[in-house]
Image 1 (cartoon, rainbow, N blue to C red):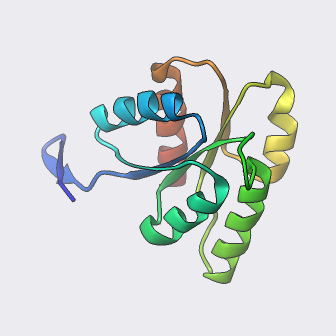
Image 2: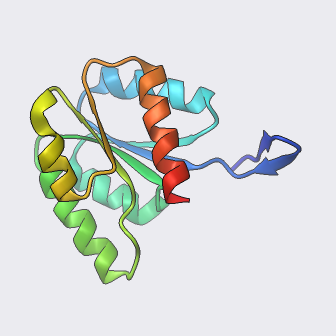
Length: 136
């Protein structure tokens, strides 16, 4: 793990887990987040995502809705159960979706933010930073 210069001091990079089966999107987002100083982990489906949560304890999760094996909603339920079992607060989640009309459902599920695909990296990073600041 590397330390990053932050103002007059140093900080440990915050960890972000991207759970999405679209490898192209994952790579673009990973590059953008890494350039901003985040430590990024990836998972291609919800099952792998839960394993990465256990291994890395991310500060934030970017979550696609439509995936094979375990979709985004199933992942959220598994994440809530895992974190409740461990006595942890729910890790902030930013849902990534192609559907614009999902805001109410996402709020009901406890999602901090959502973003509609396709998006530019500056909007995504802005939402991520807003979530991390409000959670920290």
